[in-house]
Amino acid sequence: MIRINENYLKLKASYLFADISRRVTAFQQANPDKKIIRLGIGDVTEPLPEAVVAAFHKGVDEMADAGTFRGYGPEQGYDFLRDLIAKEDFQSRGADISGDEIFVSDGAKCDTGNIQELFAGDIRIAIPDPVYPVYVDTNVMAGRTGQNVAGRYEGLVYLDGTRENGFIPELPGEPVDLIYLCYPNNPTGATITRAQLKAWVDYARENKALILFDAAYEAFIRDPELPRSIYEIEGAREVAIEFRSLSKTAGFTGTRLAFTVVPKTCMAYDGQGGAHSLHAMWNRRHTTKFNGVSYPVQRAAAAVYSPEGKAQSRALVDHYLNNAAIIRKEMTALGYDCVGGENSPYVWIDGKMGSWDFFDMLLNKAAVVCTPGAGFGSCGEGYIRISAFNSLANVQEAMERLRAVLK
Image 1 (tube, rainbow, N blue to C red):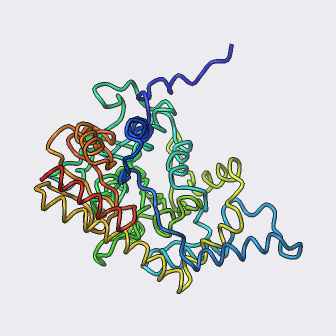
Image 2 (cartoon, rainbow, N blue to C red):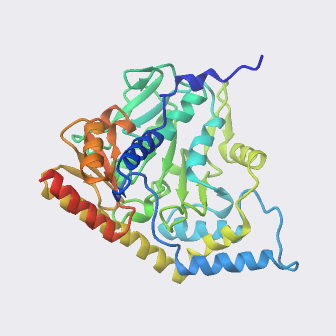
Image 3 (cartoon, rainbow, N blue to C red):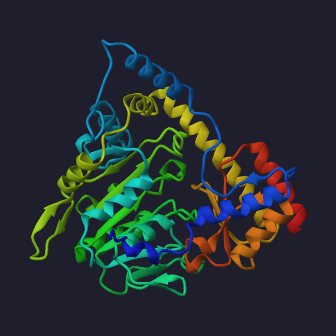
């Protein structure tokens, strides 16, 4: 008799976005003539930058020629891309990161979920609330939690993000081993200052803890005073792993390319206190379970760092930031308190009612899809997240509909 991993039975009945999809599908079936405007899931809508498309075509053409064809590439990514990333994303900002500390992958979602394989089953994990659900669910699947009781899993240390603390949680009040941070934050859109991030790095160094830093939305930061990488903070190389993605930076959600940075000086410990290189461990895991991102996609990714690619990618991000500014302005004018929408593509809104109630109202009365904050954790109850990922015309139409419903 084959047995299942019973930790899966601890998971909530459905994944947040699957639940949203089910409700939206039911609404569309009941209202086939209604145009639904989707401002829920953070999926890009604009085409890839021209420089990226040209490089993509060139990479495909190389694969069609026996003289330039490539089979298996290096699992960690081609050096031409890893070195570019190190130079443009890190060294240019004073962060001491080399190309061989970068691991190219097909998605930050995969990496943030898979990285937990490196750690013992009984470590203490600190999770912000509200939070991107993947951080929680993958640790539930791995057996690091108890049951879900009143919306929270036993065994996790929850770090409350509230309006009062600006959705920057306080340092843990009890010892923890692994800390998840995400800034600019998904879902709240909050950003973190250098001083605030330094406090987390200092905590990790003092307590031999490790920070998993999700920087998937760093390209949306326009304030030069805000850090775009945790490695801009002194000492972070020893205590942090960073996750990046081109999904929102350059529209790669359907093209798939991300990368994880694991410095060679980043260590974790065995039961006797012996230090072990997480870089070496992740390299072992990566080469065992992953065969690399395709050559044409990596060539396309390299074009993001060309002068043309930089300008075109920035224009894409500016488009979504403009949408976010419109959403924040309109919702504020309607009397709702908002976070995000500045240096972030997400606007986090106090809905003045239950999250799912507000979601259903916007769907049923305005045919606009948002994301209920309660799906991101207990502290998200009463909030909704509106995504700026759509066309300008759709965002403007959605705001017109919301004004008619909420005024």
